[in-house]
Amino acid sequence: MNFYRYFWIFLLLINYTLFSQSIDSNFTLVIDPGHGGKDPGNTGNGYLEKKIALNIGLKIGERLKKYRNISVIYTRKTDVFVDLHKRAKIANDVQADLFISIHCDAHTSNAYGAGTFVLGLHANERNFKIAQKENSVIFLEDDYQQKYEGFDPNNPESVISLVLMQEDYLDKSIVAANFIQKSFVNRLKRRDRTVKQAGFLVLRNTFMPSVLVETGFLTNKNEGSYLNSNKGQNEMADAISEAIINYFDALDNPPKSFENLTQIDKYEFKIQISASKRLLPLKSYNFNGLTNLSVRKVGSIYKYFFGLTTNYNEAKKLLKKSKSSGYKSSFIVLEKNGKPYDLDKYLNEI
Image (cartoon, rainbow, N blue to C red; front, side, top):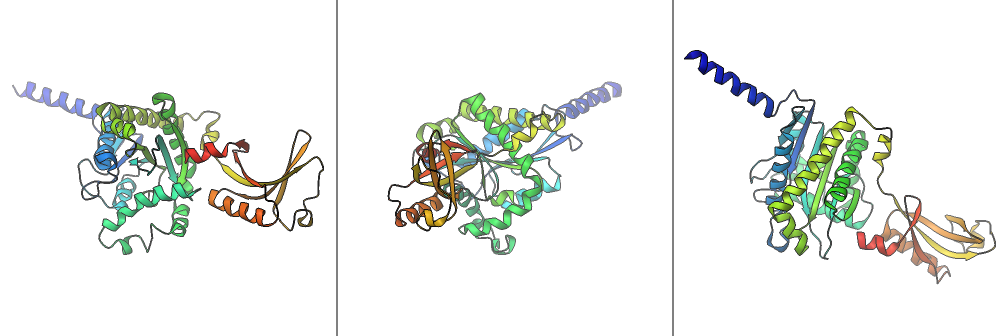
């Protein structure tokens, strides 16, 4: 009798070993469902970000638990409030290989699509607003001034101090984010909002590659309904799980183009002030006192540009300056990764 009893216990232990989380796994993933408890997140169209993020996070974990070499840890598994710095501590304590924070976006327009973020400086006002929204959670925490060393979510300059702490892990963060973004686009045919950088406080103290995922916009009626549905949550979990597996596989077997996966779309704004068949020396006296000039030949025409910035609001200031310098017909031009890009399309995207 004792033999059969111990035999069944032995089988149960084998089953537990095969399908449970294991600290000795090759890769440790920390899943961070955003918000929770007294912090509902955004409530676009009456949906709860905290509930949707938790459901998607748990579904990701369920899918990955079947892989023996992946250990899954959660920052929360129920509807509880967890301080941002504690979320990072959970990941650091288990020496995680990857930290994924799950969220849902909101906007005053009918914006839609899924996007991924890594820690970095805001390229535009929209990215700052997204980070500002997520970072404002600290106001719900006790003694947040001491915990975050005077960090102010409403001050863009506060972000600069965040970036240096994650610099060592940035390349791998971008690779992981790219895998997730491509999975959204290729697998689910979601609108591609690309990989971006912004100053998310939850990523600041995670000493490993870290990605924040905005799964879509609850403020968009159709997308909100999709994300609140079991179908939508399952599909999002499938896409993110597939991307994480591909990322871990790439770490073990990096493709020849692995370094190219660390590219983030780079937008640059210039002001075209004039065009001519004559090539003029780029001297300020030839351009009404303007400096920071450049020229490009297109066919038989030389196009002259003033200024260079990655910030659209800054570009508008440059445009105002060029017009006040006499170039009344000057206009903003945009390049994406070194190639001309439609400005209206960019403004629609952000």
